[in-house]
Image (cartoon, helix red, strand yellow):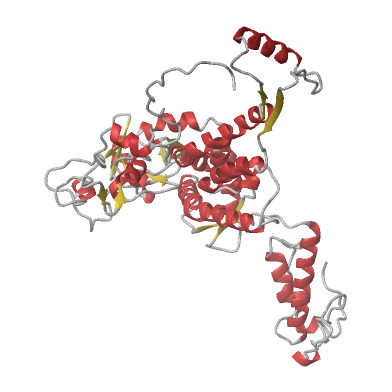
Length: 504
C-alpha cells in the first residue's frame, strides 16, 4: 500500500446518466417525474374513439396493465425521434447499409412486363423502352431506401392538365389520363407533407379511412390520397399513427441504440487491449518511506518499464502484474452488430460482409429469410408502384388499356452447372411425357419457345412441320416401358420415324 493518509470520504454523487436508455431507468423515471404516456391525438368535435375520455390512461400505483413503472418508462421513451434525427442517424455507414441494401437487392435481378391482352409483346416492349426516361429503377430504389430512413414515403404520379388543383383534389380517375398527360413520378419525404383529416378519418372506426388521412397538404395544395402510392416499412397501431404523422417506424429509430452500443464496444476494444495490464508493487515498511522517495521511484520505474520486462526493486519489494482477460471479446462485439442486423431485417453476413458463424454455419437460413423479406417488398410495395406507372404510361402513350402483369426474376441467379442440371431434368421430364403420349414434339417446342429461362426462347414454331402427313406415327408407350434406370444420358424417342427432319 502507498503511504497516503486517509481523507474524509466525500458524499457519493448520484450516478451519471448513461448513454443507453436501459441503464438506471428507474432512477431516471423518478427524476423526470414520469407520469405515463401522453400521446398526441388529433382533436375534433365530439369524442375520440381510442378511449372513453379522449385521453390515454395514465399510470396508476406504479403499474399500468401489469407493467412496472420503470419498464413502462423505458418503452414510452422509445417514441418517434423525428425526421431530422432519422436523417442524421442514417448518415452512419451501418445504418445507411441497413436502409439501402434491401432496396438495391430487391430490384437487382429486374422484372418482366407481360401484356395479358394478347400473344404479342409489342405493348410491353414499348413500355419498357420508356423506363430510362422515367427513371423507374431509380424510383423503385429510392422508395424503399428513404422509406426505411423516414418510416414512410409518398410517390406522387404527375400529370399535365389545365386544372391541376381540381385534378389532384378529386379522387384519381385512370380514365382521365389521356395522351401526353403523364409526366412521371415525384417522391416526397414525410416532413414535407401534412395530413388533412376528415370526420371519417377520426370518428368512425368502421370507415375504411379511419386514421388514414384522406388528403395531404403539400405546398399549400390539397391532394387526395388516391394520387399517391404510400410505402410504410414498419406500420404502427392506429393509436400511435398521429405521433408518427400517419407513417410508421423508421430503421434508424429501431437500430440507433444498438448501433451506438456496437460502435462504442468496437472502439473500446483496442483501448482495452493496450491497457490490459495492471502492474502493482508491494513495498516493505511503507509507513517509514518518504513520499518524495516513492514519487521519484515511480517516475524512474515509468521511465524504465518498457525495457523488455527488466525491473529494479528492493530486496523486500514484490512486483505483480494483473492481466485483463480478452477472451470472447470479439464475440461480444459481433453480438452487438448482429442485434443491429436483426432489428433492420438484414442478414448480418450481408450487412457486415462476414462469413456465417455459430449454429447456422452455412448461412442458408439467413439467406432464406432475407429472400422472403425481399419478395415481400417486391409483391407488397414495388408492384403497386409499377402497376400504377405502367397503367398511366400506357394511356398516355395511346397504347390502349390492356391488363399488365409484373413477373419478378428470381433473386438468386443459378450457376452454369445448376442451370445445366435444371435443363437436363426438364428435358428428361419432357421425354417421359412424350414416351407415354401425353405430349408431342409440337407441345415441347411451344414450351421451349415460351420459356424465358430456356436457351430456345423465341424460336419459330411452324405447326405445319408437325402435321400428320409430315411426321411418322408417334410411338406411344406405357409408363412401364420407360427405362427403369432413368433418362440420365438416354432420352426416349419422341417420334418413331421422321421422313422430314425437325426444323432448327
